[in-house]
Image 1 (cartoon, one colour):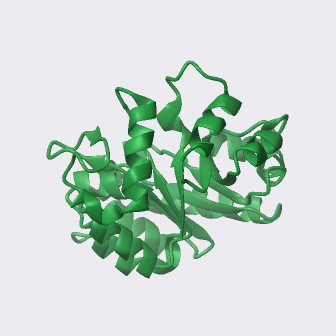
Image 2 (cartoon, rainbow, N blue to C red):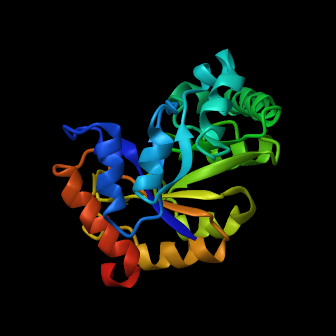
Length: 246
């Protein structure tokens, strides 16, 4: 299982993207996940110089729909074939009909990317774990997994699942065949993102479960770090020895 960081974590740094890659390259992490479609100009050289690989890219659904070929080409130019829809708002999960329509949309996106030899994943927040009134106590996330084709994968954000009251370890076990990528995010008891080891997420158990589930990439993300480089350093230490975070 490889380790990396979602570069959204470093967005507030006064640093170019190559400089951000250089900073990540000074850690033990194996790769990065881009926030947006990466421009290949100079990035392959920057990735190589930092001895990093690309784990995937977060790309809005509308952008994929406009030109799936361009999105796929940009990723494949950096030797990556994984595209992740990072967010769909609450309206997509309010009831069974909405979830079914969302599943059909993701299926369509997956088919479009598959034509260009890329795969599609969906990244959750906390609102996907609400239980619509007409789903017989099934959470929207579970219904989404059930309704989507197996060609649609998931990037399980462990922190948002924890914040929503779901057990991340159980989710990794239940949906192991659909989760190739994981966001390792710690959250406070109030559900706010925090540095790894400072929150309530059982990091050792989650890392062990991710490994047991065959997860390919374990990616650190912090939505609002006070000091992005310090958060990166903390994450690097935790990922080298997850059991220190008990």
